[in-house]
Each structure stands twice: as structure tokens, then as C-alpha cells.
Image (cartoon, rainbow, N blue to C red):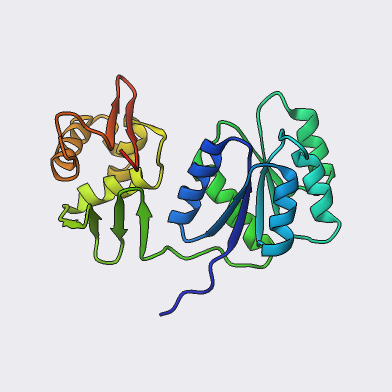
Length: 233
């Protein structure tokens, strides 16, 4: 069955790492994403592209997030989610007073942000995107229907749990994922006392996906904490 048109999300932040990560995460969920580095360029993009949702930082050069909210609200009721840090409470209140619908505090969990995105789109009357059948993650392409991963032009056959583990990491790129988070996501809550699962399956993934498993570029160990997925190695 053909999917509905992707919801369009405009991400505004002067930190390139934030815009890259959000574009990857939102894109992996089927959203069409454009980015802007400041409020002025965001307003130009907003007027020409007409997104269904705006995610904006508060502190930016030229035009901050509060003024951007105010300018958008002059002409549109599109949902706006602001990103803030803990010490920006006055600005956060100003943004809400200027028309923002919701806020997420940095550093944020991508799961929380995605839940806020879905909720904002539902409230606006636009259904959130269905799970997509495939997505790109740096040097990898993931086919969700066939449960296959391709890299460097080659198909890689993964076991069901290897696939689930890789997909979870690919949907959270450039982020440290703790042992507990990975275990719960892939094996469920009862697995937190089984850390050997993770060591075994990570070793198997590296053998299949890394050019040199002894010196991993994509599936990187964060000592004593967990692992991180580097999409580009």
C-alpha cells in the first residue's frame, strides 16, 4: 500500500551537529527534513517550503527562537517545538508566550523528541508517519521489510537479533547508548542482568559490518558505558 506524503519538518539550530543528528533521526522515521542555521534563514525556508512542523533552538544569531516563533505565528498555526537548555527558563517561557507549542530540554533523548513530534502532528490534525520500509544510515542502507542491511554495495545477512540491535543503533546515530538501554530495547526489561548478550552480538555485528573488526569504525565501544554508532565511520 502506498504511504501518505511524508510530514515536512524544519529543524533550526546554529549547531551543525544538532541539525545533522536530527535530520538523520527524523529522516530514518520517514520525515522530510530541511534545516536552517538561524532564525532569518529559517523564516525564508518556512515561507518557501511550508513545513508541517518546526523544531527550533532558542539561542541563535541574527534572530533567536523566540522572535522566530513570533514571526511564524503572524501567519501560521504550524506546531512549533523549541529546544532549550536547563538555564533558559525565562526564554522558554517567552517562546511559549510567543506561540511555541512545546519544548524539549537539551541534552534530550531522541525517543522523547520523537514522541513530542508525533503528538504535535496529531494535535495539528496531521497523522504522524508510518514506519518506513527502508532508510539510509551513513554508509549503510536498511531494508526493514526484507530485514537486510547493505553496505559498500554488498548485502549483509544478519540474524534477527543482530538486525534488531543494528537498527536500534542506526536510529540513534552519534549518540552514546548505554548497555542497559540497548539490552532493554532489543531483549526487553528482563535482560538487564545479561550483559553477555550485548558483548556476543556486538562482536558478531563487527565481524559482518566492520572492514577491520579488531579496530571498529562504525560500532565503537564507550568504555564502561556502552556503544556508539558512527554512520560514516
